[in-house]
Image 1: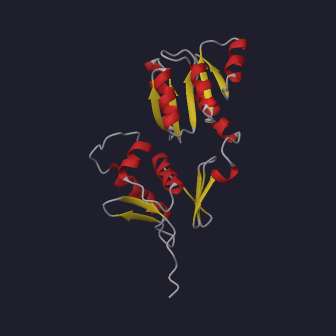
Image 2 (image 1 turned 120 degrees about the horizontal axis):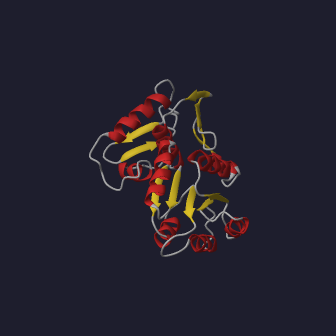
Image 3 (image 1 turned 90 degrees about the vertical axis):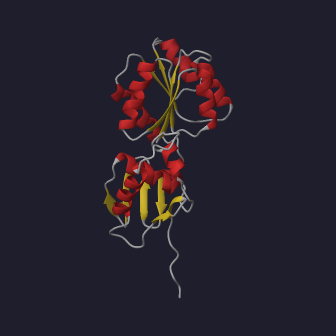
Length: 229
């Protein structure tokens, strides 16, 4: 799950980002409306958390620009402006939900989950499959050959990303940027360790093996062709 937080209050932004990361989200942050709009248009996000009062470009203007660009990413507006007219204005501008500050993180998380359950994703994209491996993006349940597989948050995110790019080579850089939110190589074996754990869970007790290491390139999740000879 990838989320963009557009919030100029650094303490609030870090509070939200920390909580989301603990729940398996990859989080990008912007501290003004102009940068936030650029990031929202240049990248694909599952949700956007948007402060209403922002420097450079206010939240409702960011929202209007997003919707005029046909971006339908679910947006939760955050604001200290909590009167009925304020909330109505935010929803009419294209917001999917409106949360008044101060707020509890548990409520924000529940609203994000509710938005995703509301059906913003097409039904045929909520269930990812490769061979007999299934990943339900709404419930976060993973099964292979009908058997439930328990994954840690990072393992789940790696698998989700690999399944979204099934058959393609996924590089270390792609994983670092989309799963760890790193835009540099930390020079550790963090990816190898997590991929190894994931492989043990989805391949060790099953046949055929689906997760392949492509030497010098990265990883690929694919269903090997059966040998007809």
